[in-house]
Image (cartoon, rainbow, N blue to C red; front, side, top):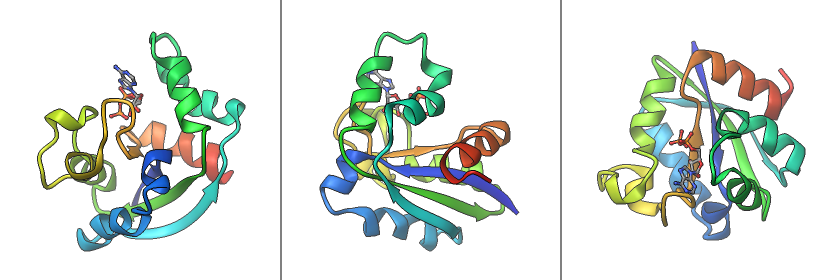
Length: 133
Ligand code: ADP
């Protein structure tokens, strides 16, 4: 079954909405098959976001993702990668439909509550980073 790596980001963990977010995936027939809370180190955060290392906001994203604990999940199901990204909504919460996680909970383009893998290759890469498997 296809797997996606999801992060519930600091802004969401800080506001006690971990459960609300997990609910979205479970209600859409996706299965949480692994999960842990982590205080991400700068080194791991840099690895995870290596694909945006050339962006001007890279440093800010690293500050944000390491500022307080996050929850990492493996979410499985048919077409899990595209399904999770649809449920999350677009990067910018202002452009996110009101039935998506980012549309409901996202604060701004950086503090957008969730991360999800955008390809099978990145899902495999990110699962190794966060779960070592
Ligand atoms: P996504 O998380 O939707 O796949 P990207 O890979 O483009 O989006 O960006 C990774 C993360 O970097 C975003 O989720 C967000 O937290 C942050 N980010 C994206 N664009 C900006 C921006 N213009 N300013 C600040 N942070 C940003």
